[in-house]
Image (cartoon, rainbow, N blue to C red; front, side):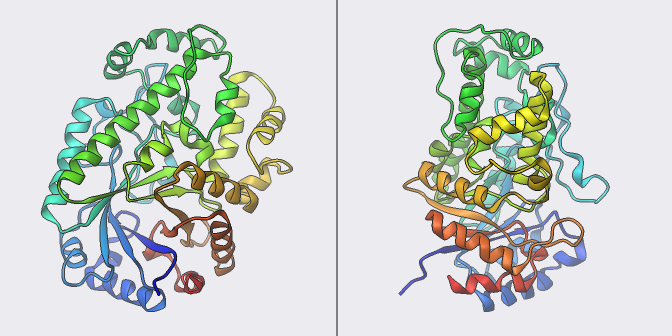
Length: 404
Protein backbone atom coordinates (compact mmCIF):
# COMPACT_ATOMS: atom_id res chain seq x y z
CA UNK A 1 0.00 0.00 0.00
CA UNK A 2 1.46 3.36 -1.03
CA UNK A 3 1.96 6.30 1.25
CA UNK A 4 -0.96 8.72 1.39
CA UNK A 5 1.03 11.97 1.50
CA UNK A 6 3.54 13.25 -1.06
CA UNK A 7 6.82 14.36 0.52
CA UNK A 8 9.00 16.93 -1.20
CA UNK A 9 12.22 18.56 -0.02
CA UNK A 10 13.76 21.84 -1.12
CA UNK A 11 17.53 22.06 -1.40
CA UNK A 12 18.95 25.53 -1.86
CA UNK A 13 22.18 26.23 -3.72
CA UNK A 14 22.26 29.89 -2.61
CA UNK A 15 21.70 29.74 1.16
CA UNK A 16 24.83 27.75 2.09
CA UNK A 17 28.56 28.29 1.69
CA UNK A 18 30.44 26.54 -1.09
CA UNK A 19 32.00 23.91 1.17
CA UNK A 20 28.55 22.92 2.44
CA UNK A 21 27.45 22.41 -1.17
CA UNK A 22 30.27 20.05 -2.08
CA UNK A 23 28.41 17.31 -4.03
CA UNK A 24 29.43 14.31 -1.93
CA UNK A 25 28.56 16.17 1.24
CA UNK A 26 25.12 17.05 -0.12
CA UNK A 27 24.57 13.47 -1.29
CA UNK A 28 25.44 12.15 2.17
CA UNK A 29 22.91 14.51 3.72
CA UNK A 30 20.23 13.41 1.28
CA UNK A 31 20.93 9.76 2.00
CA UNK A 32 20.70 10.43 5.74
CA UNK A 33 17.32 12.05 5.15
CA UNK A 34 15.80 9.29 3.02
CA UNK A 35 16.90 6.70 5.56
CA UNK A 36 14.54 8.46 7.97
CA UNK A 37 11.73 9.10 5.48
CA UNK A 38 11.61 8.45 1.72
CA UNK A 39 11.20 11.56 -0.43
CA UNK A 40 9.08 11.64 -3.56
CA UNK A 41 10.56 14.81 -5.02
CA UNK A 42 13.70 16.90 -4.56
CA UNK A 43 13.38 20.55 -5.66
CA UNK A 44 16.92 21.89 -6.12
CA UNK A 45 18.22 25.31 -7.10
CA UNK A 46 18.41 28.01 -8.00
CA UNK A 47 22.04 28.88 -8.62
CA UNK A 48 23.55 26.51 -11.17
CA UNK A 49 26.15 24.14 -9.72
CA UNK A 50 27.15 21.86 -12.55
CA UNK A 51 28.65 18.94 -10.66
CA UNK A 52 25.87 18.87 -8.08
CA UNK A 53 23.11 19.15 -10.68
CA UNK A 54 24.62 16.40 -12.83
CA UNK A 55 25.07 14.08 -9.87
CA UNK A 56 21.60 14.48 -8.35
CA UNK A 57 19.73 14.31 -11.67
CA UNK A 58 21.80 11.36 -12.83
CA UNK A 59 22.72 7.96 -11.45
CA UNK A 60 23.07 9.30 -7.89
CA UNK A 61 19.53 10.65 -7.61
CA UNK A 62 17.93 9.57 -4.35
CA UNK A 63 14.38 10.72 -5.15
CA UNK A 64 11.98 9.43 -7.74
CA UNK A 65 11.77 12.91 -9.26
CA UNK A 66 14.10 15.91 -9.22
CA UNK A 67 12.75 19.37 -10.05
CA UNK A 68 14.74 22.51 -10.77
CA UNK A 69 13.81 25.17 -8.21
CA UNK A 70 13.82 28.36 -10.27
CA UNK A 71 13.14 32.06 -9.37
CA UNK A 72 11.34 33.10 -12.54
CA UNK A 73 11.07 36.84 -11.84
CA UNK A 74 14.02 37.47 -9.52
CA UNK A 75 17.75 36.87 -9.23
CA UNK A 76 18.13 35.00 -12.53
CA UNK A 77 21.38 35.34 -14.55
CA UNK A 78 21.39 38.74 -16.24
CA UNK A 79 18.88 40.17 -13.72
CA UNK A 80 19.17 43.92 -14.25
CA UNK A 81 17.97 47.17 -12.70
CA UNK A 82 15.96 47.90 -15.86
CA UNK A 83 13.92 44.72 -15.28
CA UNK A 84 12.58 45.77 -11.87
CA UNK A 85 9.01 46.75 -11.18
CA UNK A 86 8.37 50.50 -10.90
CA UNK A 87 6.17 51.91 -8.15
CA UNK A 88 3.63 54.73 -8.44
CA UNK A 89 6.36 57.22 -7.52
CA UNK A 90 8.45 56.01 -10.47
CA UNK A 91 10.98 54.27 -8.20
CA UNK A 92 12.45 50.82 -8.84
CA UNK A 93 11.88 47.88 -6.47
CA UNK A 94 14.07 48.09 -3.37
CA UNK A 95 13.69 44.47 -2.36
CA UNK A 96 13.94 43.11 1.18
CA UNK A 97 17.21 43.77 2.96
CA UNK A 98 17.09 41.02 5.56
CA UNK A 99 19.92 39.05 3.95
CA UNK A 100 22.17 42.08 3.51
CA UNK A 101 25.80 41.31 4.31
CA UNK A 102 25.25 37.55 4.63
CA UNK A 103 26.46 36.58 1.16
CA UNK A 104 23.10 34.95 0.40
CA UNK A 105 22.17 35.67 -3.21
CA UNK A 106 18.49 36.42 -2.70
CA UNK A 107 17.48 40.06 -3.11
CA UNK A 108 13.66 39.76 -3.10
CA UNK A 109 13.65 42.35 -5.87
CA UNK A 110 11.07 41.50 -8.50
CA UNK A 111 11.21 41.84 -12.27
CA UNK A 112 8.11 43.02 -14.07
CA UNK A 113 6.20 40.14 -15.72
CA UNK A 114 5.39 42.42 -18.67
CA UNK A 115 9.02 43.41 -19.31
CA UNK A 116 9.92 41.68 -22.58
CA UNK A 117 13.68 41.75 -22.06
CA UNK A 118 13.34 40.34 -18.55
CA UNK A 119 11.21 37.48 -19.86
CA UNK A 120 13.63 36.79 -22.71
CA UNK A 121 16.52 36.42 -20.28
CA UNK A 122 14.78 34.42 -17.57
CA UNK A 123 13.15 32.02 -20.03
CA UNK A 124 16.41 31.63 -21.95
CA UNK A 125 18.18 30.59 -18.77
CA UNK A 126 15.40 28.23 -17.68
CA UNK A 127 15.27 26.66 -21.14
CA UNK A 128 19.03 26.07 -21.07
CA UNK A 129 18.97 24.47 -17.61
CA UNK A 130 16.06 22.16 -18.42
CA UNK A 131 17.68 21.17 -21.71
CA UNK A 132 21.14 20.54 -20.25
CA UNK A 133 20.25 18.64 -17.07
CA UNK A 134 17.88 15.70 -16.63
CA UNK A 135 15.34 17.44 -14.40
CA UNK A 136 11.84 15.97 -14.32
CA UNK A 137 10.27 19.39 -14.03
CA UNK A 138 10.55 22.93 -12.71
CA UNK A 139 9.37 24.35 -9.40
CA UNK A 140 8.59 27.99 -10.22
CA UNK A 141 9.31 30.48 -7.44
CA UNK A 142 9.17 34.31 -7.37
CA UNK A 143 6.15 34.32 -9.69
CA UNK A 144 4.67 37.46 -8.21
CA UNK A 145 4.90 41.15 -7.48
CA UNK A 146 6.66 42.36 -4.29
CA UNK A 147 4.97 41.78 -0.94
CA UNK A 148 4.34 43.89 2.15
CA UNK A 149 7.56 42.64 3.74
CA UNK A 150 9.34 44.89 1.22
CA UNK A 151 7.19 47.86 2.23
CA UNK A 152 4.12 49.43 0.66
CA UNK A 153 6.19 51.34 -1.90
CA UNK A 154 7.31 48.05 -3.45
CA UNK A 155 3.78 46.64 -3.36
CA UNK A 156 2.16 49.50 -5.30
CA UNK A 157 3.61 48.48 -8.65
CA UNK A 158 4.07 48.30 -11.61
CA UNK A 159 4.02 51.47 -13.71
CA UNK A 160 6.80 50.75 -16.19
CA UNK A 161 6.31 51.44 -19.94
CA UNK A 162 5.60 47.75 -20.59
CA UNK A 163 2.79 47.73 -18.03
CA UNK A 164 1.35 51.02 -19.26
CA UNK A 165 1.11 49.63 -22.79
CA UNK A 166 -0.32 46.29 -21.68
CA UNK A 167 -2.86 47.94 -19.35
CA UNK A 168 -3.97 50.39 -22.03
CA UNK A 169 -4.72 47.45 -24.32
CA UNK A 170 -7.36 46.26 -21.83
CA UNK A 171 -8.77 49.71 -21.11
CA UNK A 172 -6.89 50.51 -17.90
CA UNK A 173 -5.10 53.86 -17.65
CA UNK A 174 -2.18 53.49 -15.26
CA UNK A 175 -1.70 57.26 -15.12
CA UNK A 176 -5.14 57.45 -13.50
CA UNK A 177 -4.25 54.60 -11.14
CA UNK A 178 -1.07 56.46 -10.21
CA UNK A 179 -3.05 59.61 -9.48
CA UNK A 180 -5.47 57.68 -7.29
CA UNK A 181 -2.62 56.21 -5.27
CA UNK A 182 -1.03 59.64 -4.89
CA UNK A 183 -4.33 60.73 -3.34
CA UNK A 184 -4.09 57.92 -0.81
CA UNK A 185 -6.49 55.65 -2.67
CA UNK A 186 -9.36 58.10 -2.27
CA UNK A 187 -10.10 58.78 -5.93
CA UNK A 188 -13.21 56.67 -6.47
CA UNK A 189 -12.69 56.83 -10.23
CA UNK A 190 -13.32 53.89 -12.47
CA UNK A 191 -16.31 52.13 -13.84
CA UNK A 192 -17.81 48.69 -13.45
CA UNK A 193 -16.37 45.96 -11.28
CA UNK A 194 -13.31 43.76 -11.43
CA UNK A 195 -13.23 40.33 -9.82
CA UNK A 196 -9.88 39.88 -8.11
CA UNK A 197 -8.39 36.42 -7.44
CA UNK A 198 -10.24 34.54 -4.67
CA UNK A 199 -8.79 34.16 -1.19
CA UNK A 200 -8.26 37.81 -0.26
CA UNK A 201 -11.83 38.87 0.41
CA UNK A 202 -10.49 41.50 2.82
CA UNK A 203 -8.77 43.24 -0.10
CA UNK A 204 -11.92 43.26 -2.19
CA UNK A 205 -13.87 44.81 0.68
CA UNK A 206 -11.14 47.35 1.40
CA UNK A 207 -11.23 48.56 -2.22
CA UNK A 208 -14.98 48.19 -2.76
CA UNK A 209 -15.37 51.93 -3.37
CA UNK A 210 -12.28 52.04 -5.61
CA UNK A 211 -13.18 50.14 -8.80
CA UNK A 212 -10.11 51.40 -10.64
CA UNK A 213 -7.78 50.05 -7.95
CA UNK A 214 -9.61 46.72 -8.07
CA UNK A 215 -9.06 46.72 -11.83
CA UNK A 216 -5.37 47.29 -11.18
CA UNK A 217 -5.25 44.33 -8.79
CA UNK A 218 -6.94 42.19 -11.45
CA UNK A 219 -4.55 43.45 -14.14
CA UNK A 220 -1.54 42.54 -12.01
CA UNK A 221 -2.90 39.04 -11.43
CA UNK A 222 -3.56 38.62 -15.14
CA UNK A 223 0.02 39.71 -15.87
CA UNK A 224 1.47 37.06 -13.54
CA UNK A 225 -0.97 34.40 -14.75
CA UNK A 226 -0.08 35.11 -18.38
CA UNK A 227 3.66 34.73 -17.89
CA UNK A 228 3.29 31.58 -15.75
CA UNK A 229 0.95 30.05 -18.33
CA UNK A 230 3.43 30.87 -21.10
CA UNK A 231 6.30 29.24 -19.21
CA UNK A 232 4.19 26.22 -18.24
CA UNK A 233 3.23 25.63 -21.87
CA UNK A 234 6.87 25.78 -22.98
CA UNK A 235 8.07 23.51 -20.18
CA UNK A 236 5.34 20.95 -20.77
CA UNK A 237 6.18 20.95 -24.49
CA UNK A 238 9.64 19.75 -23.41
CA UNK A 239 7.99 16.77 -21.71
CA UNK A 240 8.61 18.14 -18.23
CA UNK A 241 6.34 18.95 -15.28
CA UNK A 242 5.51 22.23 -13.57
CA UNK A 243 4.99 23.01 -9.89
CA UNK A 244 4.45 26.43 -8.31
CA UNK A 245 5.45 28.20 -5.10
CA UNK A 246 2.66 30.54 -3.97
CA UNK A 247 1.76 32.86 -1.13
CA UNK A 248 -0.70 32.04 1.63
CA UNK A 249 -4.26 32.49 0.24
CA UNK A 250 -5.17 35.64 2.16
CA UNK A 251 -2.10 37.39 0.75
CA UNK A 252 -1.85 35.86 -2.72
CA UNK A 253 -4.01 38.38 -4.60
CA UNK A 254 -1.97 41.23 -3.13
CA UNK A 255 1.14 39.90 -4.91
CA UNK A 256 -0.69 39.12 -8.15
CA UNK A 257 -1.29 35.41 -7.69
CA UNK A 258 -4.50 33.71 -8.82
CA UNK A 259 -4.25 30.40 -6.97
CA UNK A 260 -7.00 28.47 -8.80
CA UNK A 261 -5.59 29.50 -12.18
CA UNK A 262 -2.01 28.59 -11.27
CA UNK A 263 -3.13 25.28 -9.80
CA UNK A 264 -4.63 24.40 -13.16
CA UNK A 265 -1.17 24.65 -14.72
CA UNK A 266 0.70 22.62 -12.13
CA UNK A 267 1.45 19.07 -11.06
CA UNK A 268 1.51 20.25 -7.46
CA UNK A 269 1.21 23.55 -5.60
CA UNK A 270 3.12 24.62 -2.50
CA UNK A 271 1.53 27.44 -0.47
CA UNK A 272 4.04 29.17 1.79
CA UNK A 273 1.96 29.12 4.97
CA UNK A 274 4.91 29.88 7.22
CA UNK A 275 4.60 30.35 10.96
CA UNK A 276 8.16 31.06 12.14
CA UNK A 277 10.11 32.42 9.17
CA UNK A 278 11.03 36.10 9.05
CA UNK A 279 10.74 37.88 5.72
CA UNK A 280 8.71 37.77 2.50
CA UNK A 281 5.91 35.15 2.43
CA UNK A 282 6.24 34.48 6.19
CA UNK A 283 3.00 35.27 8.02
CA UNK A 284 4.69 36.60 11.15
CA UNK A 285 6.33 39.25 8.94
CA UNK A 286 3.72 39.82 6.25
CA UNK A 287 0.64 40.26 8.47
CA UNK A 288 2.18 42.89 10.80
CA UNK A 289 3.71 44.68 7.79
CA UNK A 290 0.32 44.70 6.09
CA UNK A 291 -1.36 46.17 9.16
CA UNK A 292 1.26 48.87 9.74
CA UNK A 293 1.53 49.86 6.08
CA UNK A 294 -2.25 50.08 5.65
CA UNK A 295 -2.53 52.18 8.79
CA UNK A 296 0.00 54.64 7.41
CA UNK A 297 -1.50 54.70 3.93
CA UNK A 298 -5.07 55.19 5.16
CA UNK A 299 -4.11 57.62 7.94
CA UNK A 300 -5.50 55.54 10.82
CA UNK A 301 -4.03 54.16 14.04
CA UNK A 302 -2.25 50.80 13.94
CA UNK A 303 -4.63 49.41 16.58
CA UNK A 304 -7.57 50.36 14.37
CA UNK A 305 -5.97 48.66 11.37
CA UNK A 306 -5.30 45.53 13.46
CA UNK A 307 -8.91 45.44 14.64
CA UNK A 308 -10.14 45.74 11.05
CA UNK A 309 -7.78 43.00 9.83
CA UNK A 310 -8.80 40.70 12.68
CA UNK A 311 -12.43 41.08 11.63
CA UNK A 312 -11.65 40.17 8.02
CA UNK A 313 -8.92 37.50 8.17
CA UNK A 314 -9.99 34.22 9.75
CA UNK A 315 -8.34 33.25 13.05
CA UNK A 316 -6.49 36.56 13.47
CA UNK A 317 -8.80 37.90 16.17
CA UNK A 318 -7.50 38.11 19.73
CA UNK A 319 -3.79 38.47 18.91
CA UNK A 320 -1.55 41.49 19.33
CA UNK A 321 1.02 42.50 16.73
CA UNK A 322 3.78 41.45 19.10
CA UNK A 323 2.28 37.96 19.44
CA UNK A 324 1.96 37.61 15.66
CA UNK A 325 5.54 38.80 15.14
CA UNK A 326 6.80 36.15 17.55
CA UNK A 327 5.04 33.34 15.69
CA UNK A 328 1.95 33.31 13.51
CA UNK A 329 -0.94 31.70 15.44
CA UNK A 330 -1.31 28.00 14.73
CA UNK A 331 -5.04 28.56 14.24
CA UNK A 332 -4.22 31.05 11.45
CA UNK A 333 -1.97 28.45 9.80
CA UNK A 334 -4.88 26.01 9.87
CA UNK A 335 -7.35 28.51 8.44
CA UNK A 336 -4.98 29.40 5.59
CA UNK A 337 -4.32 25.72 4.85
CA UNK A 338 -8.05 24.96 4.66
CA UNK A 339 -8.59 27.90 2.35
CA UNK A 340 -5.69 26.80 0.13
CA UNK A 341 -7.12 23.29 -0.18
CA UNK A 342 -10.46 24.73 -1.28
CA UNK A 343 -8.89 27.07 -3.83
CA UNK A 344 -6.67 24.52 -5.58
CA UNK A 345 -9.18 21.69 -5.68
CA UNK A 346 -8.19 19.15 -8.32
CA UNK A 347 -4.43 19.72 -7.97
CA UNK A 348 -2.17 18.16 -5.34
CA UNK A 349 -1.60 20.73 -2.60
CA UNK A 350 1.65 20.19 -0.71
CA UNK A 351 1.85 22.56 2.22
CA UNK A 352 5.10 24.35 2.97
CA UNK A 353 6.35 22.73 6.18
CA UNK A 354 8.97 24.73 8.06
CA UNK A 355 11.78 22.38 9.03
CA UNK A 356 14.68 24.84 8.80
CA UNK A 357 16.19 25.86 12.11
CA UNK A 358 18.76 28.65 12.37
CA UNK A 359 19.73 29.59 15.93
CA UNK A 360 19.01 33.23 16.60
CA UNK A 361 17.02 33.59 13.37
CA UNK A 362 14.23 31.02 13.53
CA UNK A 363 14.22 28.01 15.79
CA UNK A 364 11.90 25.25 14.67
CA UNK A 365 11.64 22.18 16.89
CA UNK A 366 10.28 18.67 16.21
CA UNK A 367 7.20 19.66 18.22
CA UNK A 368 6.60 22.60 15.88
CA UNK A 369 6.91 20.27 12.90
CA UNK A 370 4.43 17.84 14.48
CA UNK A 371 1.96 20.67 15.11
CA UNK A 372 2.16 21.86 11.50
CA UNK A 373 1.73 18.32 10.17
CA UNK A 374 -1.37 17.85 12.33
CA UNK A 375 -2.82 21.14 11.08
CA UNK A 376 -2.08 20.22 7.46
CA UNK A 377 -3.66 16.79 7.74
CA UNK A 378 -6.72 18.33 9.37
CA UNK A 379 -6.99 20.78 6.48
CA UNK A 380 -6.86 17.99 3.91
CA UNK A 381 -3.51 18.68 2.24
CA UNK A 382 -2.08 16.13 -0.17
CA UNK A 383 1.50 16.38 1.03
CA UNK A 384 4.24 18.49 2.56
CA UNK A 385 7.28 20.36 1.28
CA UNK A 386 10.24 20.45 3.68
CA UNK A 387 10.98 24.15 3.59
CA UNK A 388 13.03 25.74 2.53
CA UNK A 389 16.41 24.11 2.66
CA UNK A 390 17.29 20.54 3.56
CA UNK A 391 20.86 21.58 4.36
CA UNK A 392 19.61 23.79 7.21
CA UNK A 393 17.12 21.22 8.49
CA UNK A 394 18.20 19.29 11.61
CA UNK A 395 17.61 15.57 11.23
CA UNK A 396 15.43 15.58 14.35
CA UNK A 397 13.01 17.86 12.50
CA UNK A 398 12.57 15.17 9.85
CA UNK A 399 11.68 12.44 12.35
CA UNK A 400 8.01 13.57 12.75
CA UNK A 401 7.45 12.87 9.05
CA UNK A 402 7.87 9.14 9.69
CA UNK A 403 4.27 9.09 10.92
CA UNK A 404 3.13 9.80 7.37
